[in-house]
Length: 477
Ligand code: 5AD
Ligand code: SF4
Image: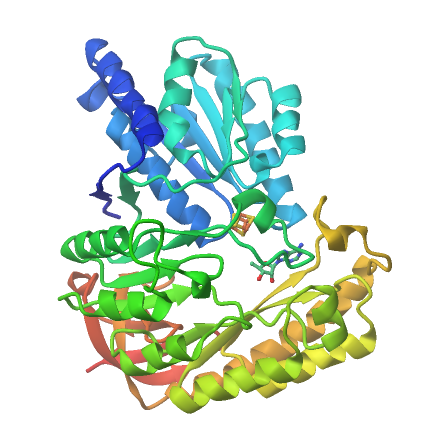
């Protein structure tokens, strides 16, 4: 897969200071002759959501700028970065176990530098655990400190003290180079942080308060991405509806205006966005989706639960009825829209009746896809201290019922595409059949179709011949 390199202007003096270490690391490597074939390698392991994937592309951009070369094998890396997630316990356990497995690499070659960033180590207890029990980790950096990685590495390479960065101030660091994983699909962060404090969620604690990038910086990045061959751009934010134009522009630029401005850029591309909080998904956003041809007709609108009692305990600030009204509005404006959702099963106090209300809202909303999660208590969040935590067996049994219903509805929704022509961005050769390509349909489902690999990275019109549970099959027209 090709990698792209996007650069932008540094706007913050502190970030400029941190990024100056790129030059120090690079010139040291050059002096040692560690360039070209002899350049040291970096390996990045990413957990969690798209926001983290986008951050990892910044980490990769920094590594490349410092003179490191990417490897897919941690055993041959001299710099290992782990970008962690904290949203559920499972993600933290996996990260800790992977970090543990890197010990032998450091034992074999003490020159290897291991750094850990992301949401897990933005919690003090976790950063402390790495400091105490993982002595081969040279540094940790919180979600707001990606720009500090060159300085942290520079320090580690010079035999400096181990460093554990936990700033309680989250800024926007513009100007970090980005090395993208895909040439055709791109993440574009438009805002960071979250102010919602849903009672189960760790995100506001590990990603700080909401702050928007300037519309100008976003448009510049979008332009660069499109010029660089990006055909499918996803605007990212924990709650994109709160986008407010950022600190530099006039604050009248909301998410709808931002989407209009991006769509007005020349080029053959399409635009997505995630995630929207149902309480904030505005009429203007819905209208923008309806009006702009380039905007993919897909709304990810996490409901979390169908029970008003549970929604209240979750601090979601809407009722099941208000949620369904919002969906009715979206469907009225965008009749063929694909709807997806996140749902939590086994929130503290969830009764059989509450759970049945969740199944009922799934039936009413008719989701194209549901991402479902068993509730995982997160230390420091209000829900973790609630009484009536649900036993695992009960949650698991409910989860099975939810998955079965979700798949049944997805199947039914999927059928509507059979016989239609849809526009697919050819992404890759199919993993199971080398004569087939897989692509991203408009709106959400992967589409498999027979075509020549030279089509990869381009749009193709595909006639859908069959619907499978979470994918479609078709033929090129
Ligand atoms: N337990 C289980 N799922 C969670 N999510 C967020 N926090 C938790 C938690 N503590 C889910 C929500 C959110 C998605 C990204 O992860 O459904 O929308
Ligand atoms: Fe993403 Fe949330 Fe996980 Fe952080 S904790 S990586 S914001 S899902």
